[in-house]
Length: 113
Length: 115
Image (cartoon, rainbow over all chains, first blue to last red; front, side):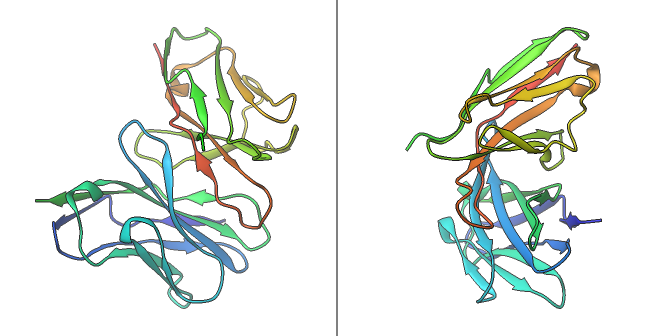
């Protein structure tokens, strides 16, 4: 069965420090991987996606994610966190050739001033 | 560019009552999705439309849930009758369908509370 795991329910980081939100996946074929962010009472907003090519993907608001095929991971990173980055982050995956996107349970990021 | 529009934003009903949610996708987006998001969980696909055709409704509980996208633009998701366990956020998303994989753009959702 296809699945996406976000092992941390919550990540706490101080403003200005680097942040990492972890994600591992299990899908058939070559994976397509996504990160979304959700603010309170808002829908999910697209941050970035990996299709093929360079393992480091750059996205919106200074976020980037690193694809690691051997570890089946797609961790979200940002060099310097902002208080405004505090939100709920979802990793998602789709198996190559498939159309169904599987979402992780989400990781809540708290950035403290 | 206007985003995905959903209404109502909030709905409170008694159990066994019917309820309907409406979604208007981004203009030109051929693919439309309805997702269910339970508290503390990620979205789960209920149904996917390519234009007016439902191409994946395997996760839709067809005994009480129905959906339609008659003209291939806006869509309605209905629950009849609602149960306590249906309390959740119902998200609509759309994508162009022009590339694979295409990016899904989400609406703000409808938060349903069944009493």
